[in-house]
Length: 199
Image (cartoon, rainbow, N blue to C red; front, side, top):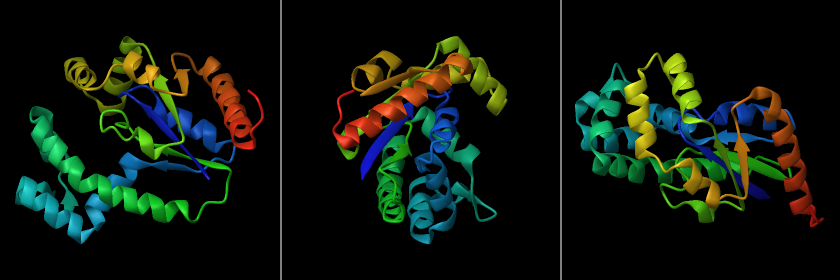
């Protein structure tokens, strides 16, 4: 089975793209969502995160996301330590999920494929890009955040051009009208890649 990575910076619209692929019957594993579930429900993971962040890491048995975000936002080393704890758990969970799938290919949506040098885990990689102003507007509306905070997050992520250079496919997600056509073409190309047909 072919594993396709789907990545892109904050506000690029990965979730919208994932939904379009699901429309073709492609199973999508959303790594960030599964990581949050594991951080809330895996006792082993909870204990490791409490050791790293202190008892404030959890509030009423739930992950204290605001507290953790405030910590890792200012400290890249701490973010790397957290990723080193969480990623192996997500990886093991993904392998279990993969065994239940029967389609020609699956998509694993993950925000930091390139930042974590995880390219080798995928057969193909799709990067979703969008104009920075559009990305900022989306995140401000979605998270009720402010533009300066979003700009700081974007600055900490690998640039769209760097991600695009290392990808097999690039989706430009500025307008929904063109998005569906791009996804349709890529879905067709992936199926042709699997069957060995020329693109």
